[in-house]
Amino acid sequence: MNDRIHNEKLITPIGTSFVECIIPHLMAEAFSAYRKRDFTRPWFQVSPWENSHAAAAIVLTAVAIEAYRNRIYYLEKEKTSRNVPQNIGNIFAKKLLTFPSQKFESIVREVFVIRDVVVHSHIYELDVALSREDWDMVKYTEEKLNGYGDNKFKRSVNTNTGKTKLIRFNAQPLKIGFEDLFKVLLVFDLFAGIAEKAFGRGYVSVTWLQQSNNRWAENLSQLLTYYYDQVPNQKFVESVEGLSKELRKDFASFLLSGGDYFITNTCSKCSALGFHKLEGVWRCNACGVKMGFGLDDINNSKLLNQAHE
Ligand SMILES: [Zn+2]
Image (tube, rainbow, N blue to C red; front, side, top):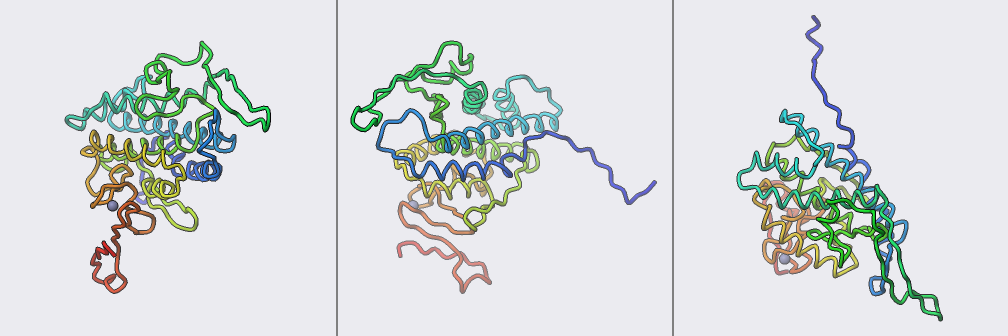
């Protein structure tokens, strides 16, 4: 026997690296088109550049969630079923007392509904009215053709708004853009955080170190904050504040305290989102509170509160 050889059993769910290796690039491309959008006009589709990169990243995130489901079930010696969102809700509830599994299942289901919309290419018919002077679109109506959308779709989508009921993802494929991708990743961040609390690190392990604009994000929350701070659509900023507040109410106690998660990354004074930024900067955009290492105090690691400057 050669005792210099170490034997280990490895498992192979492909897809777990999509979030850390591919999605940041797709997100950057989607954002480059999104930031140029005119948010004051009616629109039935986002630009193909934004749409294709965002939709591809959403599909890959759903694939990653399924891969992690497989990994969790393998390590817990449980049997999977075809219903990934239900499996995830159930296994979390098994580990975390009082976990609201139905609510979380519905949220994950909405991600899979949007994945299906892209993967199964739902077809819509649009009636568009254009101005004769400049051929600008004045208004439009749209209708999904019958035959697209399964039970999960019918359960999750509000047909009046064309959006999912809880997270308000766009269910019309041409409308899917950066904002939908952002919210899908917010859900993924929450999923990874709950898994961390339920099973410890290592079950949903995302090794994160991503460069954005020559600055490094150490985790998904920081990357989301980096984009959140640059979002040009005030309406979207407000809706993310509202959504995160709601998710905090239900799920904050199922995240590790002291962990870096987007929905709990809030200002201690006014609770606005996006407090901890890239590279050890803590600053609130809403009320101006700052926190950081003062240069003179780096050696003894004393935190300086520089509020009210
Ligand atoms: Zn604040």
